[in-house]
Image 1 (cartoon, each protein chain N blue to C red):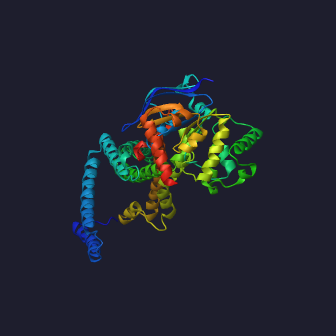
Image 2: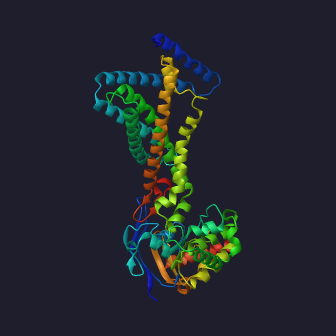
Image 3: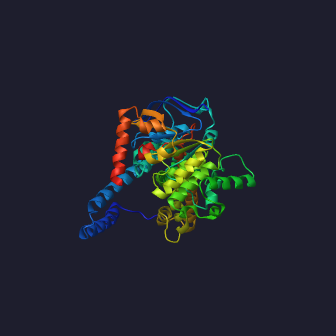
Amino acid sequence: MTLNLSLSQLVLAASMVLVAMAISTWQHLGLTKSLAIGAVRGTVQLIFMGYVLVTVFRINEPLLIGLLMVLMVILAAHTAAGRQKENKGDKKRVAYFAFISILISTTLTLFFVSQVVIDVDPWYSPQYLIPLAGMVIANSMNAAALGAERFASELCARRHHVEALLALGASPKEACEALMRKAVGAAMMPTISALMVVGLVSLPGMMSGQILSGVSPLLAVRYQLVVQFMIVSAAAMTSVMMVIFYARSFFDHEAQSLDLTRLIGH
Amino acid sequence: MGDIFVFDHACFHTEEKKVLDDLTLTIPKGACFCFVGPSGAGKSSVVRLLNRLNIKTAGNIIFEGRPIESYDVQVLRHRIGFVFQHAAIFEGTVETNLRLALKYSEPMDEAEIHSRMLESLKFVGLSEEDLSRNALKMSGGEQQRVGIARTLMQKPDVLCLDEPTASLDIENANTIVNTIKSLHKSHTIVMVNHHLNEVKEVATHVAMIDQGQLVEVASCDDFFNHPKRQRTQEFLDAYQRYRGAKE
């Protein structure tokens, strides 16, 4: 059984945002405007995405599906770069490395899940690929953003130690491997935490959505498990690639010297 | 004895600044060569160029007759030991920190490692009992000595010291100065130091750098007693006034 949702029901649901806005106004939280903008923006974005998906599903053309996914990766890389704090001046580089890392990890995990695990037919079926890609890309984006941010802050804080190791003859990789491990750990932490509490504290959106639309909870759980495993794998690949690429960009590899001028000036 | 280092029109420019411009000078083997000058003059960059922690953008730097780029970086860094202003002590004991120096070299037998540790500690006035101490809980002066001992573990030919006493109190600074004096008996020393009283005590040669340019290079005696450049005299006078005001 699929429960239909009419427009009037949707408008009724939107009234819940009014409650949040009323609380904000009453408590002088200063969030009323942001809540209103957020609600309108989210609605427009999702409706727009709905129409895009309807069109993509109808055209059912692999090239178009591929382009849509690359666009999603570009937006994710841009967002990851926008979240950098200590390394604000380094956004272009972060965006570039995030794009490569997310693209590779998404392609690999999606290929494995859609072709080996679920065996989607045809292989480019947008009904499967796009929602799966959306979930992988969003989680990879968080991993890339966290990995880069943490690595930059660790490198600034521990630069004397890194240089001391270089001066003792360590290679750039040897000199910053401890920092890289910390950055990858920080990038992976939200994904691992989510895996720990899934089913206990949180019922994931995709699974809830499936159950609400009438799919058996046991089948929904199976799909959710596939998604969780896919996200863990993609987040691990993204964070490792992101941190390795980003770390390498701070070193001159021929001279094995560290250049932090773009983060802290000379 | 000959020259161990030759700077031949060496430059180090970044996108924003000419940190060092057209530096030409020689450092004799066995010297204790000190770079002095105001803060931000480019002194630290000079010594960092020697083991390629900074990369020159033009000119040549020769080490024992060969351009520094012709050496394997690891070999160059083992031969030119570097001591930083911040000792960069790692978690663990003094022994952990000393062993770190050999982590990136050819494997060595345990007896040799132990004898190197004792020799290095002796140089800096520490002893075998200190090996088991928590290095992070030592005083700033002791940490700096551990930093020097760690560099000595590699048996470098040259020791570069970048303001090794800048963050120490007078007593600890004196200990480090005495250590440098004893190290000078067996090593070429290249040092950056803005404490001119310490420079007077240890240097054989002094070079003054200002705004990325070499102002004057002379023997220690000539530099302090018969400076040729007006800028050197101004710098020495300013230091005397600063010392007088402090005392």
